[in-house]
Image (cartoon, rainbow, N blue to C red):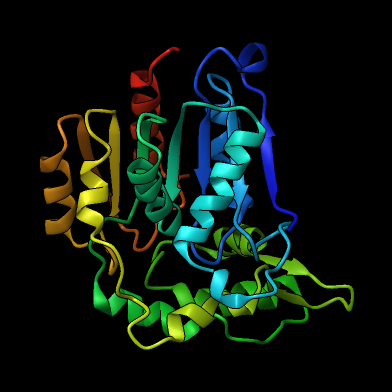
Length: 276
């Protein structure tokens, strides 16, 4: 199937250093990183991935392939096609789970990672909230209507947003149809695996977490997060020798990575990455 990624060449073509792979959350796409990537690409080659069923990537014929292990296989196929041996990763939510699984299944390839409001343990309340809305249908007649609807759903996540902020994130997560309606920019069937009884059970992600070893790791946690508990984030930082925890104030799940605290922490993390 056709899978899409945005490639930002970086300085001098960017091939001298391991590139940074940006991987979005469950219902998100490469536009999640539209502000961050040009900033980071001033120093490194960056690849913003769109998982199957999102954005410009094709929708899967079998909705039960919308699971992290399949996304891992898709990412490895991308890396191999581009002949990328070693890389760093910035993963938001689902993108962070994929990053952990890449660390566990592709030893030696990951040279650093950012985990945006996600970890080896996820809070049940936050998962239930996501299950309640993911895959829901509906459309809106204008971008303002869509932004207001999106704000109604996510106001607790971003309590300080004004209408301009809501428009910005809505345009990252929605698209205009040929009929002139605004809809979420993902296949509604990505929710199918989440509906399977026991579907949340899986591998022990703490062992995948420890597979990161001694590479530079940044853990970003939204201070209002209902997905990543502070205690879990603190344990994550304690279990790896080069892990650092930064909390982003007045934000839930997940920080947009446009916040000053997040941007400064990512800049410091990039500076730690190996040059070759």
